[in-house]
Amino acid sequence: MSKINPNPLKNIEDWEDDLLQRYPEKTSEKTKEAFRDYENSDRAAGVREFYKLNHQYQSYDFVVEKEKEFLQFNKREMSLWDAVEFLNTLVDDSDPDIELDQLQHLLQTSENIRADGHPDWFVLTGFLHDVGKVLCLFGEPQWAVVGDTFPVGCQYSDKIVHHEYFQLNPDYTNEQYQTPLGVYTQNCGLENVKMSWGHDEYLYQIVKDYLPEEALYMIRYHSFYAQHREGAYDHLLNAHDQKMFAWVNKFNPYDLYSKAPVPPDSKALRPYYEDLVAKYLPATLHF
Image 1 (spheres, rainbow, N blue to C red):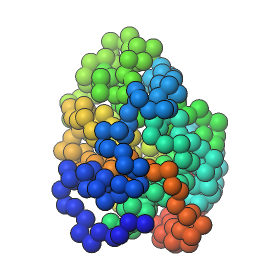
Image 2: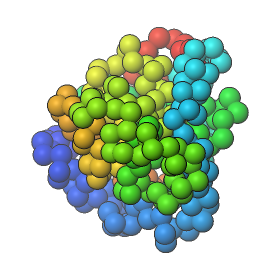
Image 3: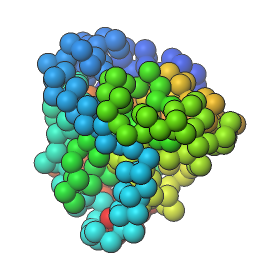
């Protein structure tokens, strides 16, 4: 475990470099540029096939149908820890960096956040940010659960990973959807924008009544790389979104650069996280 940093950085633009300096052993000496390498990774071929399916089928109508199906929250009632334990069986097909199961990734993320002395709700966010991947438990294919997210109903940015596969999407030939604004208006705010369906939006909808807004932005948009890395959709964000995205940017280095092949001791850590979950969330949640 790294030493606790008593003075977390204030300038989020410095976070990524700082994390790599303080956790070199956790990234197997990978440079920042080596992460999210979709061409040279050992997993590149499988990841490419994943995004082909994702971009082909994640249409506006598909998102609408999935929201109708899953936002009734009538699939299962279970504790957060039960959901996390299910994730122990899942390896993310969209991740080019590492093949660890999801529980280990969640603990790596949250433990690095905790080591830096952040508020406990921030630690909890790191621990549960991918729990929406329980969608796979209900028979959903991974291309409808994981991977980078993007707005539907407007033009696809060329900053989206493997954007070339959008040519297979039925929305690609819909003129209404293929302008920068599409069905939206200038700076309408992300609350009014439909994102590709997946674990981010699903978990946000489940926990939105329990966590601070900063945490909810991290959960809802942590996979929206075309925006928080590239700023490709500034024309859809309003002023409040721009302010809150500072938290998404602060969270991202922990999510990305904490990935390491050495798993944390989940048994030893469980009591701490059980208490933390109980502080903010009810005993069971509706999925």
